[in-house]
Image 1 (cartoon, rainbow, N blue to C red):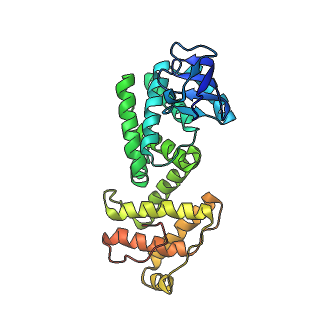
Image 2 (tube, helix red, strand yellow; image 1 turned 60 degrees about the vertical axis):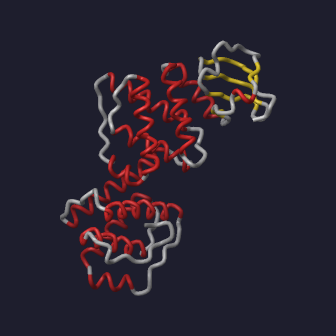
Image 3 (cartoon, rainbow, N blue to C red; image 1 turned 135 degrees about the vertical axis):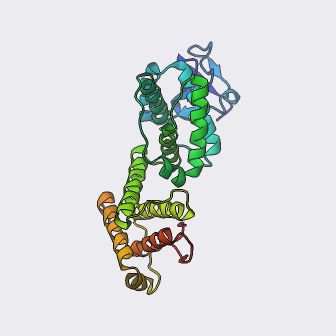
Length: 293
């Protein structure tokens, strides 16, 4: 931000103002106490706002301004604090939309809590395994909100916040991130039914399977080519025909849900993970596509 700072156009509350910015024209500036004792035409030096959030996208600005009157001012302040924490620990820039989406989500979560409505999160364990860094950040966020707002948001909310954080880091809508998590959860359920097993969620084999499914979905969405190791597919078909068939069923489900073709090589890698899951060892560790584990 340039040294000339910004000029207050309108104070929305103690923590949010509309300001004229030298680079972005009119912006929404969010930060603890930024609007306290301010009035239109006041100038705020750049050093006073260097750790604050500035919404420059026109759509995001309008949505946030509409949201502000509906949210308790104390919650706005707490959300500023936790989103700053997220930005400092995410390791990547955050999409601006997190200010709207996460604030709105938490406000409704608190309202539901007051009404005695508690949402279940059947994919909480999967979410923790798929996005461990985001989950750790989300755990801090929920603890902070519970402490500062004197509420008791349930552990399920950690999973929901994790998806918001991951979406903001990857520039993907939360609905899309949530869709992938649900798909993975359904695939795990399908594996258990088809293989007549109950998967031990604490094993390394399960963690690896989850990560593989996540990367397989992402590869499919990116239309990334996956090559099958020479002759491995034929070998697995002969030695593990039933498991290979289940892997193909999983592929077909992914293909139908993602509305995109899934490379046949994915069946080979899925078969290897399913075998490892049954054997609970790493005896079939093979070369996997880049980025997989």
